Structures are given as C-alpha cells and as structure tokens.
Image (cartoon, rainbow, N blue to C red; front, side, top):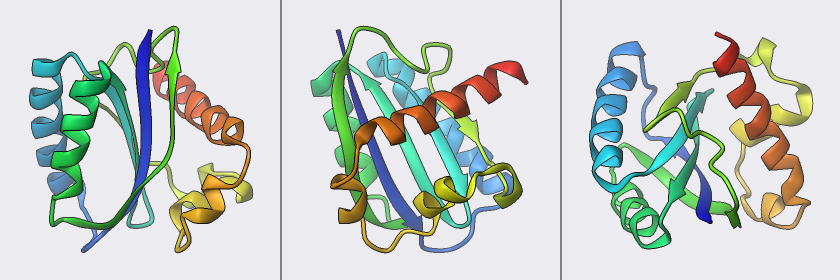
Length: 140
C-alpha cells in the first residue's frame, strides 16, 4: 500500500525552463533518498504535484515543500491510500501542458483561487486527470 498526496500552489514568479530544471534536480535527489515517486505539473504559473510513498516520508517532504518561498497558497486537495504507485517510473516526473493541450474542465486546476471548490467535488475527477497526464508522459 502506498500513500498518495496531491497539492496545488501558485508560483510567486513565473518559472522558465532553467528554473524548472533546477527544481526538478533537487526534487529527484530528495525523493530518491525517501523512495518517493511523483509527478509535478506546471501550467499557467500554478503547480499541481502528486507525491507517493510511505506516509511519514511523504508528509515530511510535503512539509519542506510547503515552506518553499518560490510558491504560495500551498494546499492539499486530495490524499488516499492506493495499492500501487501512479508514477512508479519517476522519482519526480515533470509535465508542462500548455493551455491548448488541456480540456476546458482541466484548466481550472491551473487558474485556481479557491481550493475549497476542489475539496468538495468528486476526487475521481482529479485522479482521472493525473492518470491522463501520466499516460501522455509515458507515450513521449
């Protein structure tokens, strides 16, 4: 069984390719140490990140992430226990969809102001979105 946590946040300033690569280097290094896998999605100045692994390690890493000054409004939108990892291939995968590659209903996750909206809806919608992102990445 694996603990999965998904949070969203807003970047304080826009990330470019170089700053995303630097961030990914640190994420992957840290996640390997704790056997955490996941997926970071960056779009329109917003982040969505899936972290998965042992709950105590995921929680520890999330606490570190939460205090990072490069983003704000860090909020968990869903968490669960699963039989298997969704992003088992990556210590941290990166997906940077553009607005054209997202469905209209998906764009709202990257324009959010009110996280409570997502907490009150069916979490399966979010998991379907993450499964689609992982599928796209595995095909590339």
